[in-house]
Image (cartoon, rainbow, N blue to C red; front, side, top):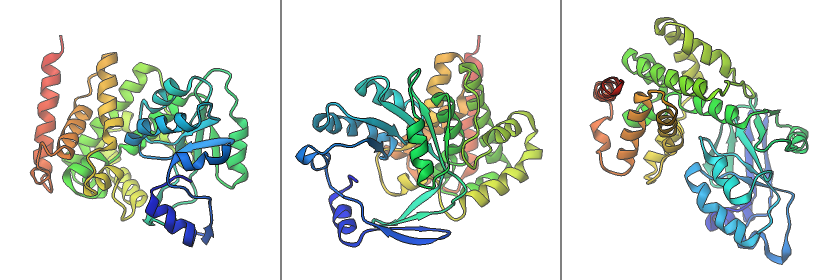
Amino acid sequence: MVTRPVTANIIDEQGLTIRQPGGRYVVRPRVVSSVRQAFLNDASYDLILMTMKSYDLADAINPLLAFCPNPPTVITLQNGLGLEEIVIEQLGPGRVVSGTLTTPVSREIPERIIVERENRGLGLAPTAPEQKIGQWVQLFQSAGLTTLRVPDFHAMKWSKALLNMIGNATSAILNRHPSVIYKHRPTYDLEIAMLRETLAVMRRLKYRVVDLPGTPTRRLANAVRLLPSAVTQSVLSSIVAEGRGNKMPSFHIDLVSGRHKNEVLYHNAAVAQMGQKVGVSTPVNQALGDILLKIVAGEIPWETYQGNPQKLVTDVKQYQEQARTRKP
């Protein structure tokens, strides 16, 4: 386990506590504070899990290749779009397995991990034709983690991104819990428009929506795509409130933490970029990505939007109007 020096020292002394609905236990992994240390004395591994944030993935590849020029299979577990391609470009085809974790996990303190729900699991998908991943599916299954093999990694990652984007960027921009976003009709309509844009890009790319462990993504997509907002609002509001609990979404956590990066770059902004590439209009995703990234960069004061949903709705409408005027 490679982590920051302070965290490595704490876990080395006290172990890593895992708390889940069925109880708690302590594990004592081998912990180091650099990739170099992990490969001292010609250490070798069967499998490497890349578990850092999406915006840290590219920087993690160089030290890996420096000390392990011929790495074993690598599983990418980042949320977001276009990340597997970064690793494949560096490691070559056939070495990378795409992964997505639907089990919500949080870190209370550096040495204490909370598994918030056990009825979810892991999706794994090959990234190259004829790539065999059965042994890795079996590995995680035998460890007690529900693991699903998905044939198409693009479909898997876009389906997970669809779930990740629910109430995420909007919540971060407005500094409000997603349940509040979904109960307020103007921001709810904004969310539905964002999800419909994402589904339209997926259709253009011919990526199907797939169910992942514990997540009926296809039913959600069909409801968003086919049913009027007035019908879906109460149902989706309840699902969002129950699914999130008191926890704020990841984009908000990064913003509050003062990080100068945000995973919206690999979600709403990535959807908008791909929409432009394939000719699908995505003004809501473009707006949410632009606004949040400008807040992160300090170009827009966060106070401009905090608790001001009408300001956000108005600004998004300007993006939509600009998109309409650009159409031939």
